Amino acid sequence: MEKVSNFRDVSIPKEWDRKGLPSWTYKSKQLLEIEKESLFFNHWQLICHQSDLSSIGDFLTFDLCNERILIIRDNENIIRAFYNLCRHRGSRVMANKKGNCTAIVCPFHGWVYNLDGTLRGASQPKSFPKFNKKDFGLKKIECEIWNGLVFIRLNKGPQKSVKCLMSPFSEELGNYKIDKMVPTDGIWTQRTEVNWKSVRDVDNEGYHVPMAHPSLQDLYGKNYFDEPFVNGISKTHASFSGKTARNWSVKNYKRFSSPASHLPDKYKNSWNYFGIFPNAVIAVTPETVQFYQEFPISTDLTLLRGSIYRHKNETRQQRVARYLSNRIDNHTVAEDVQLTIWSNESMNSKSFEGFYLSDLEYGVKSHHDHMRRQIPILKIEKQPDEHLIYKLNKEMLENISLK
Image 1 (cartoon, one colour):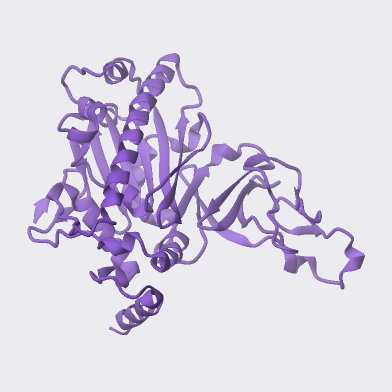
Image 2 (image 1 turned 60 degrees about the vertical axis):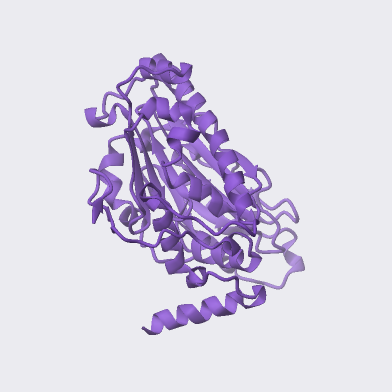
């Protein structure tokens, strides 16, 4: 066994299957529906930070794989999650992306809900038979706040609580006081014409950094360590290079970087990335925390989404450092988007025989293995008949449960 890094007791086998997922898995519409249910609905999804909903009545809405989500802070100061779906005719009860309200009023027929999701009343109630309002509240969604970050889960899945899932990193991330941070420019979104897995494949390895990301290479040099996914989480540690930077943004970021006083010395000169299966990353710098993620819209269209948060009492120097780190990040995102396009294109080529992974890409392998455990049909190399994919996967799951 070979040790991956010095930050967790994580090893990779000397001999392992260096193949990634077969190309058909990036094109199958029926498989995508299985992925939505088994991966995106059954696992915790990071939606926002509690400071995005700072006042009673603050809300935001979001579409997650065709399901409409509403997050709101109620009169008891509790952040709650509901399906953004009126119990009358299924309209969106909140049409705006974000805002503040004293009650939830459906724009279709005017049914009114309290901030805790209970039904206050139907419009023209005499036109309905008598019914119990308790039976017609908004449908609740499981919600958990961890370190100030708001997670939801649509179905019960293999993971327990977010607190349990993230426990190996709780002490380290606790040093950043994420729960005390506040938004910068709000939640951003971007669409890219690739399969969602191509986005994750690029992000799950640092082997490409020296060639594809000159700014990051200038910042880190060889001080970049990837860990594989273990029990649904992973980590990448990148400490600043001791060499003089050539890139303008990197050179000045190192100059102005101003870690918070509460941050231990060992984290003051590094950027760290914490992966959450299947599709999210929490990234921390000495000045900020951000999350980014991807959600499938179709087999060849993906929504990228994220947000950056800062210290509430940010100094002028920290603001300058944040501006410079954003410049570095923006270049990196653009470079990664292009890499995902090129990688995804190969899945349509008859000449491409699939991934052959380096030890430095074991994070891709471990992420794929996590998916294979949830969706066993991903183990099949040759594409099955499209109309049989759901049936075959179900049979494979049943066979696993019988063993």
